[in-house]
Image (cartoon, rainbow, N blue to C red):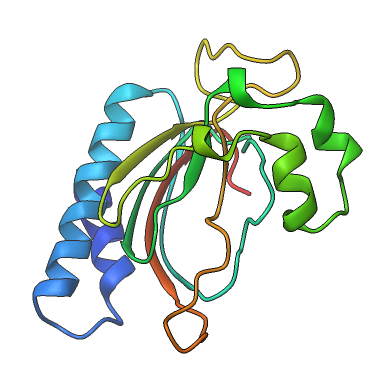
Length: 171
């Protein structure tokens, strides 16, 4: 309990005092508690605030952590798709290609992509989630960063994310 509070305090320590800092800290603590209740045997918790201006994870993928809770405070939420709408054979076939080419081959129907709104809470089960089932080699939620977002003048728009991860290893 005390350790989680201290970790959340460290997460926001360099932010200016005020409502945004308090909100981020509170959200991080609530998301961490929720994840830890879901998977109490996962030994490692990581908290991160990330500002990203380009597609950090621009390719469709599955992560190998236990689980992640995520909020995008600025910019669009992380895109995700149901297994039934994924061409898993295209993961390897399109490796090394830009997202403009690989996206439409991995997820051929653009309208099948779930695009959470800004401030939505997203729970992503990773490949190490207890009892997860899915495609034989791709267990966990298939997701990616939203495609490059620009403002009306064509400038790249940053995203502000809170990530709370549970994992079996400390990597």
